[in-house]
Image (cartoon, rainbow, N blue to C red; front, side, top):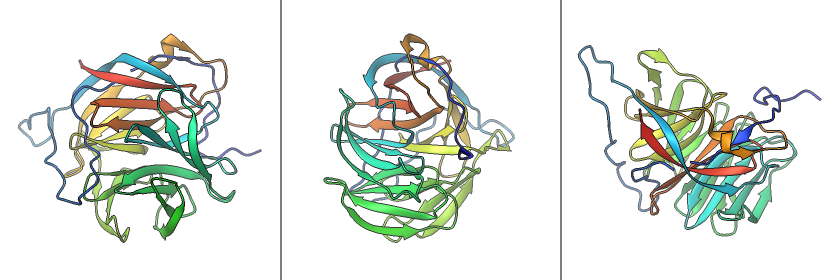
Length: 281
């Protein structure tokens, strides 16, 4: 069987657990102007922003369905919402955090490869990889409300309180109207002047877009206003304290519990979901 381009060879890894300090913002209603981005960097002479580097501490680890090829992750009202990929196995799920049990789910048809998800008010929005179609579900019972189309591949998506922000695997972030899904603007993401590609799963936290960078163990912190990378979180060694006996794939999945001031991360086929705390280097 030919594996999809973004499939990585299964490897045996060891897992550890981790939570980001500082509040995180995923407020979805009412629609309002996005909050002013929180910056921990200063603008040096020459116009290139300084970059802050972070490692992590493990706060907690929760069971995660190791059959889930995680492509999207978010958190709302005590539950995780997760989008999974691979054709024939793609789904949208509502998951109990503490146990990893799937409370409810809906399967995508076999011709769709599920991708990133975002909560937008009472909706859950889900992308697909190459089908150029997205789906909108009722957040309570996950029944399908509508679909929409877009012009690129779909990788990650998040909501900043006023607009949807979407990635397509390139260095571009797109801002979408949350009602019409029309692209309103776009920004090129740059790390110290160089284009940053591989923007994957996204989460909006404290005014910044956190992006898994495929296929690495790093998360970029991006100012959505100008596309500058303002920080890097290195999650190398995350798997060191928790053994994984089955196959695993790359780090992918960031979720923020704004009320509880917690951040969660996981990966494709990982048996653990980790709460982490950032440690500034």
